[in-house]
Image 1 (cartoon, rainbow, N blue to C red):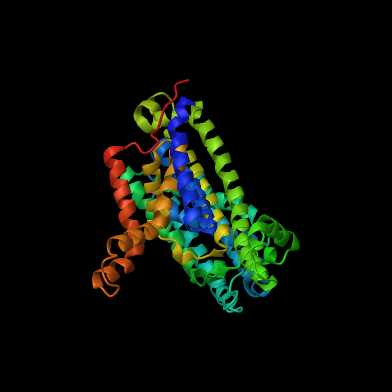
Image 2: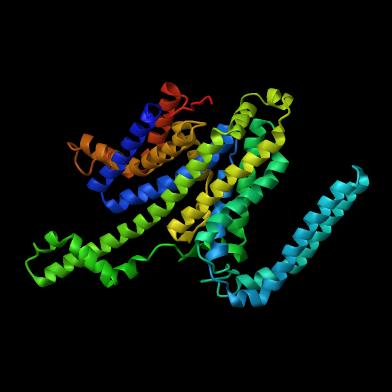
Length: 456
């Protein structure tokens, strides 16, 4: 217990802050922060596996997050029959051509020795394949995107339960990580960081501009979710009776039946939002706990000790017979898959898919800040970093606004400095996160909960 005392204290303080938000602002806001903190915690676990376990720099977190969100659309949205009838067969044909190109190229690489002939064959396969795809897919894409573009304009998905998309999101991200790892993991650390960032930008750009796939920047709204809808709860007798029973003392203070009904209606509306967020919180908490248990077991297993040995000294590990390249590829895939799961969780929580919102600041560099602040190489620290940084990210504006009003209370409301500071309150999040990161790097460079090697 003594070994985990600092972890217990840190998490207790974090939970107390979220509870204070519920008391002084609203429980709906507190639960929203808590849910996004857990989604961020899953992302930081994925990044921590890559950087903390193996020392791999991955600045492509944004791309894997976007693929996780795309999986929600492709799995949970119902198929659009009209779009499939006008272009579905052609798009499946193009998919078959792509698969054939991949296997043909792989066959040539494995069975023909390195020569100009092999290079020409591969180039010919790629050129012919791209020409065929352009001829087949071009008209099909135009026809698909013309099908009621205000509402659909894409093929839709499989119409399956949304929870399946969390697994598919992880598989999508793992597949991309395999390709990226095969190409980029041999690069030096700084080149690897640049390569992963650029590949992530390419992935997001494709999702944003291929409307037939997921409506592009027109967004997909009204996605399925594994929790009840607020409007359904507000008309459910069991839920209304539960709220009425829970707030009976407050309702008894009403002066008339109409006043009592108005109060009850407002309480039901507020409670429905809290109930839905509690449902999401329960599901997200289960995911975080499962991942934490698995990653902790892996960290202190022989495999985890091997990965830390590779991280600390690749040459020595390679001399001991360890396949460094293979292990790097495996852990790169594993960490990216976890980030893909987090991306699917986030879109499920939001209920909409907005490709235009995927930016490196929010979905790459802030995640890295979370890992650094929490503690590189420590799973508990990575999760805590996700909580701390996201809490600051959300609450920075209210905190800044409070202090601005406090220190400018003596100034008139028309004062230009006061108006400018109040209008600038939303941007204080960058200032607070930056100051927090500087303080951590100066006074606790190993993070709030630093890595601790347990000798076994």
